[in-house]
Image (cartoon, rainbow, N blue to C red; front, top):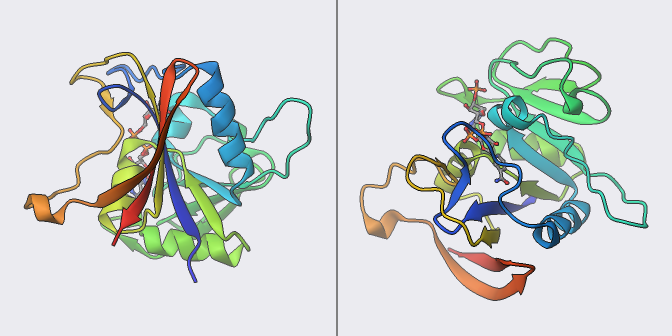
Length: 209
Ligand SMILES: NC(=O)c1ccc[n+]([C@@H]2O[C@H](COP(=O)([O-])OP(=O)(O)OC[C@H]3O[C@@H](n4cnc5c(N)ncnc54)[C@H](OP(=O)(O)O)[C@@H]3O)[C@@H](O)[C@H]2O)c1
C-alpha cells in the first residue's frame, strides 16, 4: 500500500508561495511555522522538488522546542541530479529520487525510479519511499511537485496555512499547471477544519474521490 500523502501549503491569501524572484522566507508567521514543524514530526517522510532545494537550501528537519523528535526521511525529486553536494539535505539521511544514472551526492542515497518525460513519476516516488518503511509523506513544495501529485490523484490531505498578504499574479503559485480540460476534472477536497493560527488561517482538507 502506498504512503498517505499530505500536501502542506504556506501561502499568501492569493495562493502564492514566493515572490517572482523566489523570496519565500517568511510568508506565514511563527505560530504557523511551529505547526509546520509539528506536521513534519508526525510524518515519516518530507518530500520537495529540487527547485526548492536550489532556492532555499532547507534543512527539512522537524524542530520542536524542548523535546527531541524522530526525524522524518527527507526526499528530493531531482531528475537530473542538480542537488549540490553542499546542500543541507546532502548530509544525513536523505533519499534523492532521480530519472538519471545515480551518482554520489554527499551522504544522500540516490535512487533511480521510473520516470515520464524525464521526471520521476509520483507513484514511483511513493513506492521508493514505502520501501524505506515510510507510511506517510508530507509534501512541502514547491508548486511543480504539488501539481504533479495532484495531477496523479495522489494527494489525500491538504494542510494550508494562509497569511494575510497578497503577492499578486507574478508570485509563484502554490500549485503549478494542472492541465485541466474542464472544471469537472479539477481535484476536489472537503474542508474538515479552519482555525486561526497567529495572524494566519489554517485550513485542512481531505480529498474527495
Ligand atoms: N512558501 C513555502 O512554504 C514554500 C515551500 C516550498 C517551496 N517554496 C518556493 O517554491 C519555489 C520552488 O517551487 P517550484 O514549483 O519552482 O519548484 P519545485 O516544485 O520545488 O521543484 C520542481 C522541480 O523538481 C524537479 N522534479 C523532479 N521530478 C518532478 C516531478 N515528478 N514533478 C515535478 N517536479 C519534479 C523538476 O526539476 P528537474 O526536472 O530538473 O529535476 C522541477 O523543475 C521556490 O521559490 C521556493 O522558495 C515555498
